Image (cartoon, rainbow, N blue to C red; front, side, top):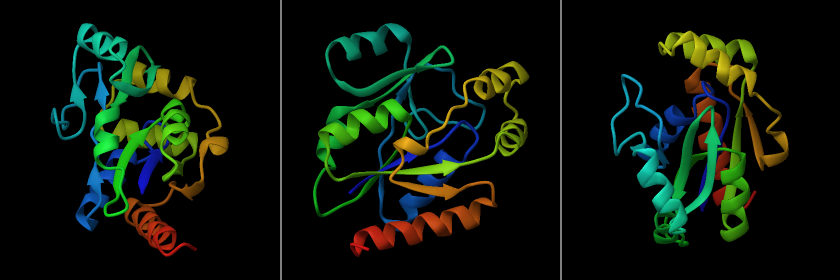
Length: 178
């Protein structure tokens, strides 16, 4: 199964994705042209590349679900999904709505999990991780309803441990066919 983690900036997507790897779910690392945050590591959090290389890879049709968000490009390497698209293993990837649509179109075993947060929670979390004030405002200005893109919605306004327990429980139910 391919688990697509969907949510706005500050919803806990990367934290949940990283925690799922401790439960045997392989992490697919996406590509971006944005600068890494202080705590982020190239090749672990994202593959950070420049716009020129990104556009070349996109033109060569290597990506799926390319999007531009607040001036930066994001996408997933098709090959990474193809390698992990089998019944013997699960993988998790952080995506936006375009990623959900594109990946679900090509991979029938993809399920999207939306970590839904209030605007206040998102703002608080972005402040806590030391995002620049104008970046926070840009991200909050583009908030939209992601419910239609979700197979499952989890209330992510709570502490991250509770959210993680809900995601693990959900994945267990999906695996059991519930």
